[in-house]
Amino acid sequence: MTQCVDADLVLVGGGLANSLIAYRLSQTRPSMRVLLVERGPHLGGEHTWSFYAADLTEEQHSWIGPFVEHTWPGYEVRFPRFTRWINSGYFSITSRHLHDVVTASLGDRVLLNRDVESIDPTEIVLSDHGHIRAAAVIDGRGPSDSPHLVFRYQKFVGQVVRLDNSHGLHGPILMDATVKQLDGYRFIYVLPLTDNVVLIEDTRYSDSPVLERDGYVGAIRHYAVTQGWRLKEVERGEQGVLPVALSGNIESFWTDGPPGVARSGLRAALFHPTTGYSLPNAVRLADHLSRMMPAGDSALYDSVKRQSVQHWSNTRFFRMLNRMLFLAGEPAQRIRIFQRFYGLPKPLIERFYAGRLTSTDRFRLLVGRPPVPIGRAILALASSGRTGIGSGQSGKPEEDRWHNPTPW
Image 1: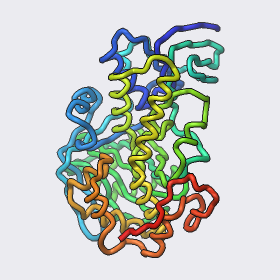
Image 2: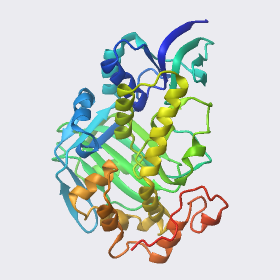
Image 3: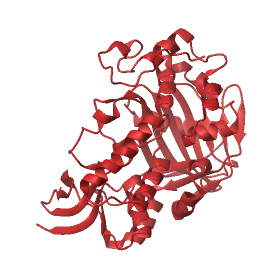
Image 4: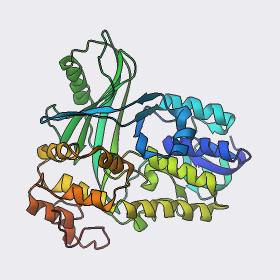
């Protein structure tokens, strides 16, 4: 089968970032011909995306409102030394609801079950040899390996389970780190979706992206039992491996992949460098394009690349902290850094996740008794993280290492 379809914009990959771009453009530029192409049977895969009230502006909260399924006034964290309730709004979106909202808005402009064979700035070729031509293309097919960026990982397996009894929670457990520490920093994440339905995720900040699902599933069941929850059935599952950025050269990163093709989401390195979460950045990119959609493929590429490069520049301090987290102490001791962080004032925690730290915040994060050995912390700051401590002398001066570090 051979077909040619003309469009103003083709979005390849129906994940979070491209879905939000398509939806926002349908609101603000209804005459624009936008196609959203997804290889799977529905948009978003099997995912739950969460974010904090402080992550978005009032206007952004307003337009993303139809996607939000669950809202809580705050959340809990649990550590060996303390338990804390943080009175800060928290929101979640599921992929199934994302699919329903976007398809209702775009209709037949959402093309499902379409494998893409190749992409260039103004055309995609489908696996059935069909061609879709457009003024511009955005590639949002998730993260891809790059030799130019250095990562560690936040990886998780989650299950939405129906219980025979009430879970008794007043809000999410963002981190329960009282569990046994495995494979780096480990915690359990719990979202109470109804009185007897919860999403339980076993999450680990790890040096390796390898995810052995069966072990995680067993740990989830064990955790439910320790909470006194009686599992009735598993409604669905999800899993993921998110990037945690340590260092890299963002300009070289943009030479990867098809030349001249704009990107979105994780594929554009638009994510929080410490959590790997991409929803706030996806909202910001959708807003940016809705306000000033560039005319033509090269202008779009330049515009999105500038967003990515600026974000990478703005978050250098976070990558410095990540190097301390992963390189300055033993994996089982990473919990000490998070335990210290969640003892800080609520406004600082909110600004940290929103990526808007002040100079005072940066100072507050680095002063005091260090939760890792200071000598290793200094070495970690000077390292790129490619091979661990000391790898700053790896012959890659372009990587954003912290020179002359004074961490405390």
